[in-house]
Amino acid sequence: MSKGIRLEDLDKRGDGREIDTSRGELSGEGAHQRVKRLDEANPAREVLHTRPTQSDVTSATPSYYGQPVLKEPVWIWTIPLYFYLGGTAGAASLLGATAEVLGGERLRPLGVRCRWIGAVGDSVSAGLLIYDLGRPERFLHMLRVFRPTSPMNLGTWILSGSGAMNGAAAVLSGQKGWLGRAGDGAALIGGLLGMPLAGYTAVLITNTSVALWQSVHKTLPLLFMASSVAGAGSLLQLLPHGPEEERILHLFGMGGKVAALAAGLAAHRDASRVEVVGRPLHQGWTGAMWVAAHVCTAASLGMDLVPGRRRPAMKVAAAVLGTAGALFTRFAMFYAGKKSSRDAQATFQGQRQGLGAAEVTGHTHASDGKPLKFPLPVLK
Image 1 (cartoon, rainbow, N blue to C red):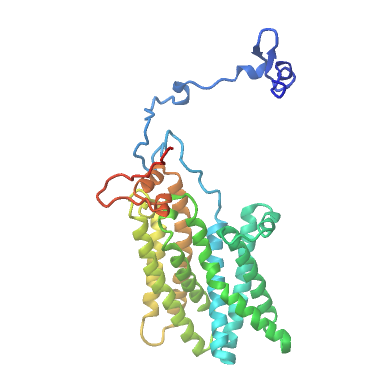
Image 2: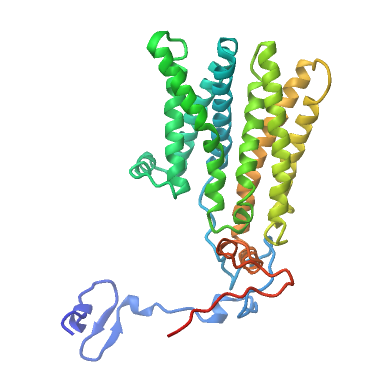
């Protein structure tokens, strides 16, 4: 017992809990602490079931034993805004690099505008992440290692690389000689990092334990990337361009909106496989925001499909609606996921239906409605 705590030492802790070594009695102000009785902890005399009860997200006790199963994500509003800005910057970088490679000097002005949008978007995105982290050094700490298996670590490197390349490309856009060629090379690298920057955020949140985010792990990356293309095209249409650049942006934005609508429907279908998991996308203000995202995107696409030369007011309206659709998509999915984490049944029912970890490990739910059967280890 030489390595144990002696009774005499406990009397010297000075934390308000003293032990009488002669009688072994606990005294002091800390000795009066006690655990509340069941009737004190539950004054309303609510029945506490021994099994998970059916609950609603908006009910008074939407959880297991009165407590949520998961901790709600601590991310704040800057994160979905970063999802939008980072995705828009990434899609603009890709468009600018492609235009400069295929169009040459004819599309050089469009490429330069895309460089600046990418540089500013990446810089603001990094600021939003640092604001959410609380301390700037935490962002730098994520760059101490390179771990491709971690979406957060890999995404930090993608954002840092994209910001450095787009910033250099924007600053060197008007230079001649080797400085100009260095800027062109930086723009090309920034364009290659564009789509990973737009899609990694979806991979990041779908690798969490939140039931709603887990349920759309196959379709959410496609939705975020398509919505980034639609958002970048809408934002660029608010700037002055030449006729050829207008046609390119028109086709670019329409393609993104069509893909965003299709991916949004696919994500909605995946989330609705289990009713309680997809409930935040059907009910409440998160459901209204989710519907608004699709309505704005569809309305913007409808205006883009108007034949003939559009009026400036219609062009601006289509661009604003496309931007709103891209923003609503990120905010709706983000806050719906936070709401899903507060609903214990979303976690339980999702796992029982073969989603989440059960889907990853291959223990999917049987089509006849029978419960999951996990193999038991053989004891030797």
